[in-house]
Amino acid sequence: MARIKPETEVIENRAQAEGALAEMAALERKMTAIKCDMQEQIDLAKAKAGQQAAPIEARFKELSKAVGVYAKLNRQELFTKGKSLDMGFGIIGFRASSRVVQMRGVTAEMTLERLHQYGLTDGIRVKEEVNREVCLGWPDERLELVGMARQSLDTFYIELKQETLPHEKGV
Image 1 (cartoon, one colour):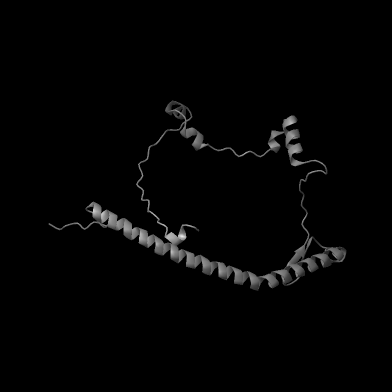
Image 2 (cartoon, helix red, strand yellow; image 1 turned 90 degrees about the vertical axis):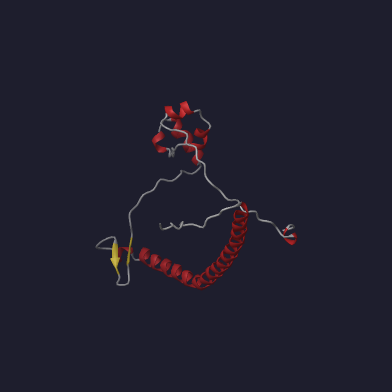
């Protein structure tokens, strides 16, 4: 009869379990060191890219602003046939849009108060969602009443001890 080999390592006693936890703690330290090195390299790369890109971004904004000023000053002659103009390397134009802004001297809080006062609650944004933290404290009958149920989970966990070296305690 062929013996089935398990897909995972088998721990047969407490000493092996403690050995596995010790190895896991060592592996976690190695992973943390690798991730710290990686993050340091990423930070350096971002800083270098930011330094290289800064003058390019500044020039891009400067040119964009200059083209915008040119378009505004020459709007009548440039946009006689429409609101946009194809210029070969790109299209420039004006888009009509509207937005709602606060009146001078009126704060957002004052506007909210007036919306409530006049019953214009459709102008108020409210995000509704189930507050599961509150529901967790409810009795099962109340949960059932609203279409919810308590579910008990027995999840396995491993908590590795992270001892600090004497020179790290003051840090």
